[in-house]
Image (cartoon, rainbow, N blue to C red; front, top):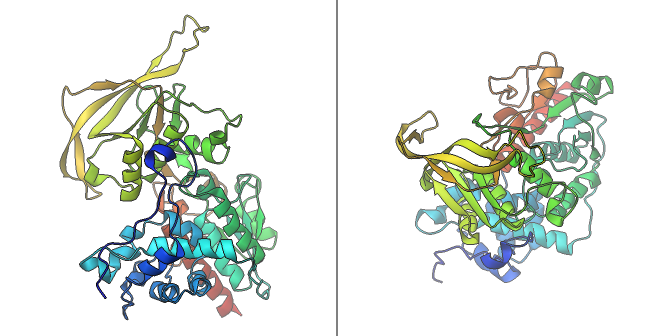
Length: 469
C-alpha cells in the first residue's frame, strides 16, 4: 500500500464564516478520517514521539487502538497519562513536541497525533456515559492552589492514587487559563467543564472564589489538615511596555481583554464592558496575541492589526494559529514596535465623550540585528521610520508574570528575579511539602508543559508519602 505522505486535513469552518462567530474553528476528524490517519503511523519500537510528550502518553499504543476501531480502548490508553485529553488535543503544540519526533516526519508530514487525540477524547465524551470509578482513599489530604492545567493534572494524578484532593480556585469557575484565557472558538468551555466533572467523579473537590494568600494562606491550609500543597496559580500578572499613553481608555492587557470576553461572556452580548468594533492593534506575536486579535474580529472590529517587532520567522505563536488569523483577515505589521499610544485628552472639557480615549498608536520600523539571549535576532530601530496606526483599541499581549500574592504571604518560599517560584526537579519548593509547577514557576508557557509539571509534582508527592509509610 502506498504511503500517504501528508496528514489528513482537519475540517474547519470557512474563514469568511468563522471570523464572525465564536463557534469552534476546527470541526474534528470523522471516524473514517481518524482511522486513515492512524494507519500512517509506523508503530516504531523505540517510540520517539513519546519522548516528545511532556505527560508521557503512550502514543503508538493509542494509535494502534484507533487502527482497530477501538476508540474507547484508545481513550483508556491516553487517560493513563493525561487528565485533560480533549483539552490537549486542541491546544497542545504537538508540532514542536510529539509530532516533531515522529519518524514519518523525517521524509513526509508527521502523523497528526494531536488531531487523533482530540478525536478519541471527543468520541468518548459523545458516546460514553460511564463516570470513572473513585479509587479507594489512602487517608492523605493534598491541597491544590489553582485550577489551571498544572493544578488539574496534579489533582487528577493524585486522585487516581487515592488521595483526597481539594482544588482552590480564585475565580468563580474552575479551569484557570483554559476558561479565562483561551477563546471559545479554540477551546469550547463545555469541553473544560466536562474534564473538570471527570475529576470530580474521581473524588476531587473544587472550591471556587478562594484566593490563596488572601482568603486563606498556605500555612492555614496545613493547619486545616492538608499534608502537602501544590501551587499552580499561573502567571496572571500582565506585562506592559511602559510607553506613554498606556493608561488611556481603550488600552487593555490581553489578560483583561480575553477574560472579559471568555469568562465574563462579553462575546455573548452580556453586560460586561469591553470595546467592540473600531480598529484594534494587538501588540505581540504569541498564541495569546493571536487569540486576542481573532477575538477582536469576532467582537465586530472593522480592522485588526498584529504589531510585532520581529519577522514572521520569529513569531512564537503556533503556525496553525497564525495561518488561521491571516485567513480571517488579521493584518500583520511585522518588524514594527510601538513607541507611544495617542489619545484625545481635552482636560478643559470633561464633557467631551472622547476625553481620554485612544486615537492612534505611534510605531517605528525595525530591522533584525545580532542574536540576543533568547537566540533570536535582536530587533533594532530604523531611524526616522516612525508612522502612526489609526486605532481606537490597543491590546498588550507581551507576556505575563506570576502574581506576587502567594510568595508575599508564604514565609520561606524562594522566588527568582522574575517572581517565579524556585523548585527542584521534583517540583519541591524551599518550603517542606510545598510543591509548585506551571506558569507560577516558569512564567507564561504552554498548557502541556504546565500539565507535565503537575504530573511531576504528583509523582513526587506520592513517592514522599509512600516512602514515609
